[in-house]
Image 1 (cartoon, rainbow, N blue to C red):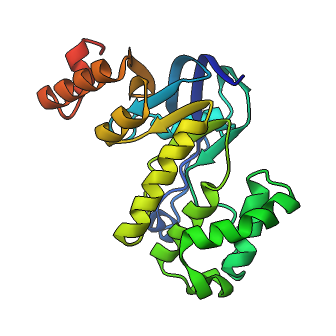
Image 2 (cartoon, rainbow, N blue to C red):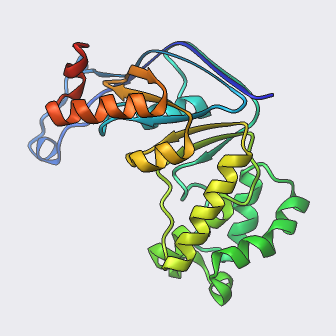
Length: 254
């Protein structure tokens, strides 16, 4: 049994501006008191259990990816609690953990270990990952010689070769020819079917409808609406049409 319980979560980023290059050249100093705060998440409540497939929608800067990273444990809430039962697997920031001087094969093993596989499991998965990537002899070469498309193919092939309990997915886009993209989409569908819980951030309403059975609309770091997928998407799209710059005004939430 897997579970995600988020209670009263707020997250603030506090930082001190570094100043511009121009300021540095003319000797201008940033005063010690000039501290900035960004309230990234505001009073988030969520409870997910086995079988839940949650879509997360909203405009850029709404807090969607920040929510995913908070669930993953990358960010620690300023207040409130995040509790997980089950092992989360993150499919975002796919470049993390790769060694550009090492070969594709070496990186398959390294990345597999970082995803929680044992050395024996990583060795057993290598041939399967290599075949799925379609990179052939390129896997013997250092990653620094890969094109961006080749690198994304390898990263996607490794990251989706596992069977997660909780899958945190943020706009993973496969690169390559039509044949590889078809394979990638099929693998994603299989992963979504197998996981206990899915949390999926996307700007594609069609993908949210295809993968999810629940949906939340985020704006300004908070959840402005949650419920059935079609209901939330229809409200969001209507609001975007009425007021593209500030869609939540359509719900009288400001």
